[in-house]
Image 1 (cartoon, rainbow, N blue to C red):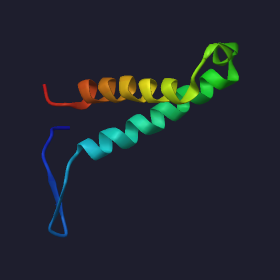
Image 2: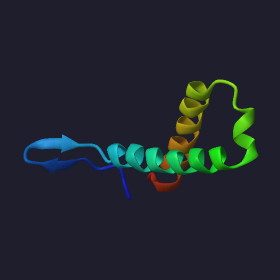
Image 3: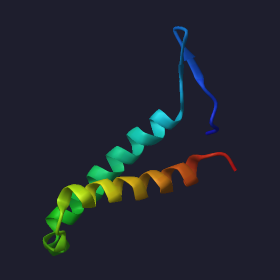
Amino acid sequence: MGLREWSLGGVLLSPFLIYVALALVLTAVVRLMLRLTPVGRWIWHEALFDCALFMCVLTLVTLGLGPR
């Protein structure tokens, strides 16, 4: 999947929007798995951890699906 814009009714949409949505879903799955295991107890600041986890997952999704 390359980084080409899509035209939807005259509005240009970036494929990065799909990357963000996919990263959000993957982050929610990872966060749920952490909450169900004892590892979740060691998270000190949940909002900061969630933001950092989302950025890491978004980076991996972008590197994995981005142009080569």
